[in-house]
Amino acid sequence: MSAIVTHPAGERNKAPILALLRQRLRAGDRVLEIASGPGQHVEALAAALPETRFQPSEPDARMRASIAARAQARQLANVAAPLAIAAQDDWPKETFDAVVVINLVHIVSQAVTERLLESAAGALLPGGLLYLYGPYRVDGRHLSAGNVEFDRVLRERDPESGIRDVEWLIERAADAGFAAPERVAMPANNLSLLFPRAER
Image (cartoon, rainbow, N blue to C red; front, side):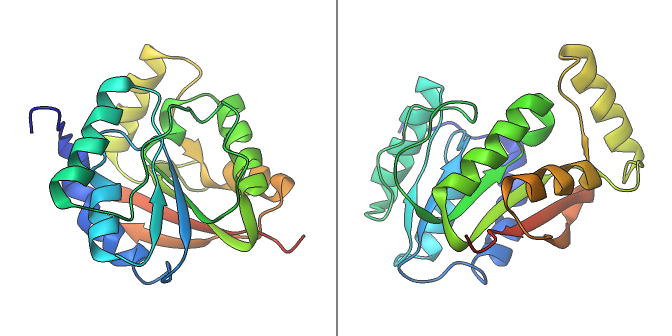
């Protein structure tokens, strides 16, 4: 089990994310997760939704090993081997019912976010779901003092990263072919954004 990696943030938010997504994902759905990290979310989702099929992805080899180890330890037959791709890469030439992206948009550039939205639109079936979770600004304002500091640290590390405005993200998603999202407030001043893929 030494390959298994655990991130504290994933442990904190996997339960509320699961509670929300288990109401939106259906038996038989095919779900692509981008930036799966060590696999905490795909493990929780797959264990709770055994008739839903999950395709994790992660560019980091150590994290992919963790995903595989988690799936093996829990005997999760509905989790495919993780793909070695990043958000900005070419995605698999397959279609999915849902694309799940957790805690990524604020650590990548606007250009990568736009590519993510375009790729998700291309990968989703009509009416499919794009799920984005993380910290966001609303009407140009951070949702907490902690998010202000987090945003400062992110931008010091990489000036192209940072907490995004929800309004900007909705506009870019509309350009890519998504309808207006459902917004769900989450613990620790985060938001879930559930974008339906517009009918082609």
